[in-house]
Length: 338
Image 1: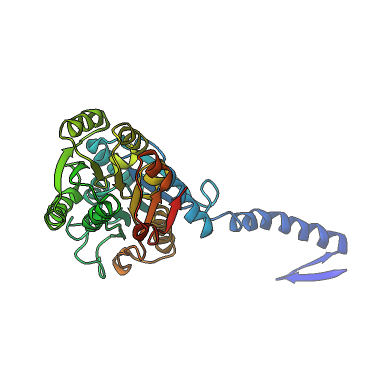
Image 2: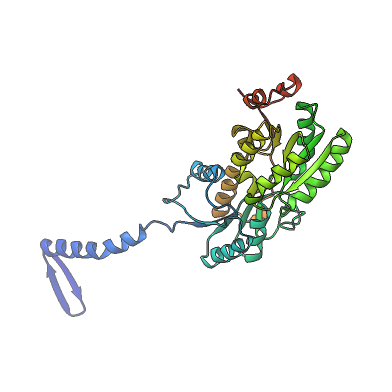
């Protein structure tokens, strides 16, 4: 028997009563313990792309998140917005992601998405991949981006002169190069300047064909046929990259040896590609997102640049075109597709 005394009153409580009280107190405490064990809020990120839908690089981004412990639908949520090449949609979607109060906006597919995201918010962190972010006005410096933006400079514009040189080396007879480009891309201005300078030193002529949408590809290739171009160079652009299967098919029908930015073109049947690994870059975007979710500020995260550029040569395509790729090119290739 346990005895309690409160003021002038005395209570005697037996062991059974004590057990009942303890159990009752336990039941009251249980909801509090359950509340304390509720899972943390799942972070939500916005994914802004000019493309009409997912592509292999988007899966590389998700894979990067999984490798860092963030599984979509379990420990992280992603709000996708696909603009289907509509620049007006990019602005509307960026504003929508801001209203949703996502923790981070991931801008992919080039300059238009990055600019739309920047115009939409100065507060929500933005992670991008694009060419020449300083020249584009996204950040003041690669080493000190400041503000709410950071990401990866894919250096697509800087490599066009090198691609033209590789194309000429692989196809020595090249004299009239058809250049397929989207004039709406910021990288196009830099690419055209560099290509014209490189063409003068190599002694080749350039025939630019500007393509603003997929529906203009057939017309562009027909025009190049009339100009009797003998080789093809595609200036990187998200829209053109999305159309790689069609471009490679049109080049094959026109019997045009071509060089491209991404290895996916060579894997699809293009003759050559030279550039950074796009999947690695998108996994890099995932790493930025995770750093920000863990408390890092975009202003303190320097813009990264690719550390390696890979040359891929498709020998199967070379044989179909009855080309013999010089050994000097093959020995430098990171991958030769047989």
